[in-house]
Length: 290
Image 1 (tube, rainbow, N blue to C red):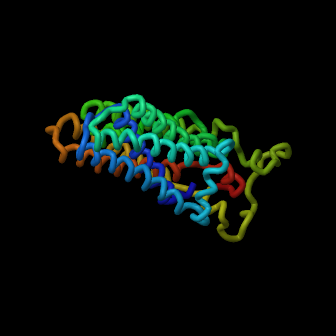
Image 2 (image 1 turned 120 degrees about the vertical axis):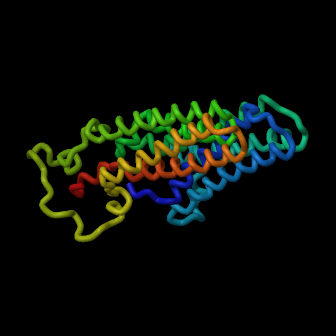
Image 3 (image 1 turned 90 degrees about the vertical axis):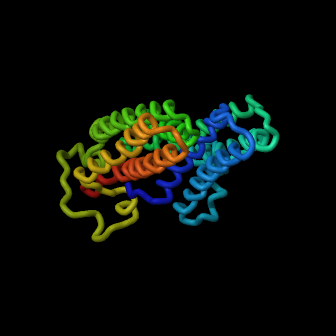
């Protein structure tokens, strides 16, 4: 599929933001006053900024408010509703931490749980799509959670714990790629099933359905060369997982070390998220002989 920058930034940065807010909700790091303000500011900036980025993918951003009305049937709507509820629940907990020096633990735990549920709802926007076999697997929500929890732990300065989570993330990402490469064939979709002509025999494309590119071809039939995909996978694995974990484990602990690890991780995260969309093979491509 066509990897729109707005959706890449939305899924990447909102996940990081809610991941950090989840760690803050369980009291890690245990900070109050100005330090707490800094952590919550980063968490809210990433979460809200990512959500705002998603509106640029809408045909008419003014219709974003309609995303809240279909929560009974739409994961996109559920994600929108949950994100607002999460931010509202965490707000008084953050105020207590920043201005009152208090720890309303139950409120924080509720906010942390809601943050992870919000990330899950974001992942389900893609997991539910049977038309994209690579996404339609339990690996998708697992990866979204690991990127949020691991990246959040990194932003929260959790040191060795963050390094361990990033290494687990790297292993899970490798397994997801291996599984994803087989998913399209496993789903059983073929040119025969796409055209409904399988009862006649083997189907081959005589002429393309359109003389030029159309919306479906632009958005749903994005082809990335295998050679380029492998290079980008290596880059994303190194930067999202191995390098930041190594930085945390082998360099002296400091704010500069954490900042370096965060920058490296974000580069890998954006690369991996670009691949997440670029490698998503929609079954409609079979109709176009792709």
